[in-house]
Length: 231
Image 1 (cartoon, rainbow, N blue to C red):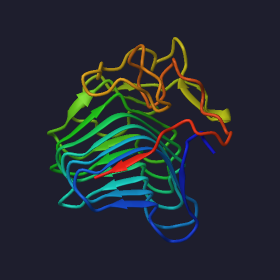
Image 2 (cartoon, helix red, strand yellow):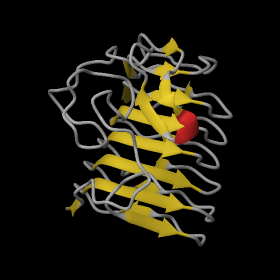
Image 3 (cartoon, helix red, strand yellow):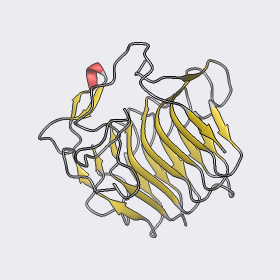
């Protein structure tokens, strides 16, 4: 399993984590829903933030933010892999998706529903069975994303390019390949945060959850992350 300090591990039909309070911050965990048909993370309230998270979802979605109360939510530095359905689903306004990596999901990587204003910036999507990024709204913002196909509708997402170069996906290394299409071409978001998913300070702005300055995700049981869940 990728190297995080704490895992929520579900082998039943339950959602990994559901947030139903305003202003909750979740940082530095892993969510593994290996058998359930529910989602890894359901965000059902406003003004929440989720950062430095690794997640997998058995046969359903990774992030699911569709509740009418789920507004003004920030997701950053998250790697979603092998979700059975979609990696990210957002259908409420005011969400921000920053430096998210979505790989090898059974449907779309990032799915933005209609009439939704979402900021999608520095996200890398690759190997998903559906569209890597599919946007059904014309009021989105953001850009400098990368996909492996460019087949979906990416309305409002400037400078989204084809091609995703990771160091070694076969061995679980989803750092940007030095000199590749993710290397140093992201939008500078240092006014909002400065770290990557491993907690290292970003020395440049790459696309995706991992920065080139970071060590590759490992498979040892160590405490690389601090865990903060506050309301």
